[in-house]
Length: 423
Image (cartoon, rainbow, N blue to C red; front, side, top):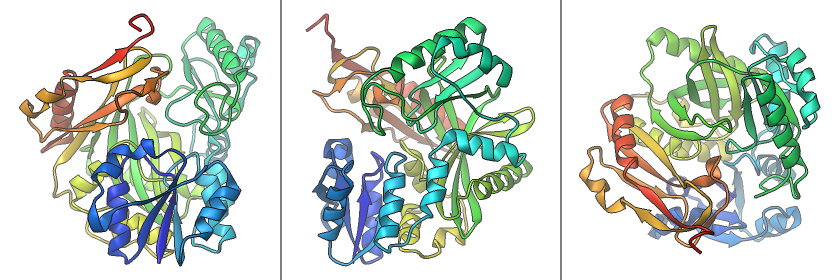
């Protein structure tokens, strides 16, 4: 039997392959760009290897043909936002286990999710679609007020997000959004130009940012843990670091688990992982966004290490249409706490390598380097996650200490780029 993945997150393929093989299945990745997975493909060896089929994953007919060539296809994995709707549609078309495509479409529309939760009393503010031009500022002021957040309905990787603290900042953000909307090729996964969906405004949430990592089956949701998230001070918010598991008081953790279960149920998410970003405001948790997948970057790696279990086994269970065993297993964080820091390029250019990698072994915490880019890659954008060249991961007895270790090590790593001036 075969389990296929329609694209995937950059990290986690090796653990997914081990989980698939443990269930007695071959694991195949369908991808339009295998360079995205260079680190995982280089480290997945032997019996737990990943078979790769190169195919245009934006071409539904090409994907159908690739899937038709696989013997005894038992399930279709999707761990990305961009391909979540096509994967749900294909699973239904092929009679494979999978989520309701309509529920997936709702979750891919951040504005619809916000309005749905607001009507249910689970979000203090609502979402208002706006035209991306400066003269929309008045309508944003009336509907949302200031500060306000502008984002796109199907955005990913912190792209096309603006925070406006005053009226002039709001007009400037709307103007920038208009320039982006006028670019070419705004489809999902587009590398430049265009907005990925419609622009909308929502209230700014004051407080620290976290993510709830959850697993659901038939409407029951289990909180696997809470991750801290650090963002940049740039207007276009960029994620900088994360740590797991956050040490919250037991009562507060129980409250968050109840809240996130209500949020996911109201949004129609009934099975599989969810990565739910939220802000702990002075009113309690408020949703930032829902990703109906396992956490990206090194979130899942952190869970595997801390919980001392391959959480991708639950992904395989759900893909095969069976209740994930992780829902009923004891959750004891017997492994170390984990933190990671994203290392960004300071300016666009061609990556030549990194300075400082040789010194990482001198730092405490079993420090590891996870490259996202490779020498020779062109880095075009540095204001969002596309500018990330790699990540530094560290372990410790607590998430706080792990974060300190990861940050201290990451500050010594510097991407070396060949810029236009140098070229």
